[in-house]
Image 1 (cartoon, rainbow, N blue to C red):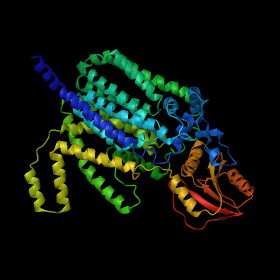
Image 2 (image 1 turned 30 degrees about the vertical axis):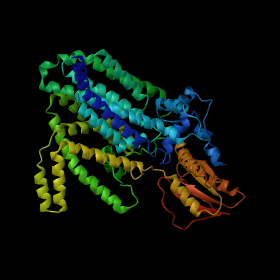
Image 3 (image 1 turned 90 degrees about the vertical axis):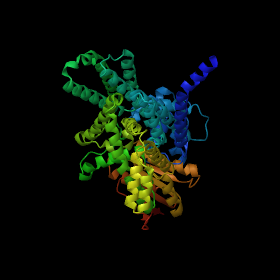
Image 4 (image 1 turned 180 degrees about the horizontal axis):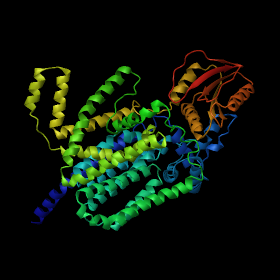
Length: 594
């Protein structure tokens, strides 16, 4: 009898065990993808900001208006044993435009590893972000499971997060976006849990209110744009309450009983936001770090934001080698993606419509839809009304990325058990014609008629997108110092001086990328650098400083002006007339000086 009870207990627990094993599989796959080729792409300006400031070092230690060596330029990347957490926070407020929590965590993280060289190791710096990206897989499983009371929604959410090209792109950068995503997921969990309670005519428990306030406060200490997440949640709750009032005017008593607790959450978020504003505004927000967020003035700037958002939405699910150097591969990749999304979008739309018919799915689905649309509206509002085009930053869409993944998972989960297509009909159609359009219709019919196959297809397209990112055929870095160095190495016949204009730590980071790549490759070690400071673009002062420095060099040298934003007057030098390859992130010109 006891043996039968134990056996039955084991059988009852088997589904739960299988559930955890499957989640473990997604975590393993996600881990492999996020740590593969982690250092293959060169770090860019924002990553240098993370590396330097989290070490407790200062960009101002790099001399301006004088010739410096590779070692001098990379001095801020050396481990600083005297720096502490207070130094990191102080530097963040002085030189950067981000809250300090992630940088403090990186400061502590680096201390866990032995020194692997003269300069901080890029793998160590990026590994924390990759690890946090892995944690988003079980986190979004929990969000899907709690919000929709469905292990299936949780599993599909985790599976999609594991292979999301966008998620892997963010996880392989030494930046704070994967940590911010974890807090977005946590806040959305509280959000969906709250609306389920709220419209079930129950009282929001105090522990949920306190937890939500705490999560929101910490989230704002990771990234200020986390505030968009909170604002979108607030707009959605207000909209849902308004719609409920329109439909059931006599059932609002439970809303009024919860009103104080909802307001407490909003007040907590507003208080955290105002606290950070009080800290950063006197320090001068930005310090030249956000000059790339241009105002909306040109006609192209007016029409580009929606397309820039679209370019973010697609890789959240899938991506193919659209950045390949081969035009044929680019065209083929674009065509396959187009054909995939022609099927995918109506399928997801239909799944959402079906989900709204189920009581367990109705409220959280409405909530996520409202949240996503609210977040997008805020993006467009800041872009067109405030006049700052934040749609240019693909990374900023982290504020609603988890909601997109879960909403897609819901639409796929709805049709999981659907299998209403007769294979014999498909085979008969296949025998009847080899017309590409007809075959495509057969594939679409097969996917529409088999829910499991649809999930496998979406996951496989996501996996292909993950591989595309890993082999650097998608989400390529804007700065490619390795290619610039190859051009210089193949062209230069004398010692090289790389000169650039300097306005903020952005330009220091651009030049550091070149120096670090030279140091990594152990090539052109005698290369010199010159950062000419300028207060205004096209200033004559920068022109004169460059001229004077070059005139004092007593030997033949090649001057390579890189991203030099001022007129160049080097009469003692001969400008290169030969057309040289274009390099992403670096506009350059070669001068031979005697």
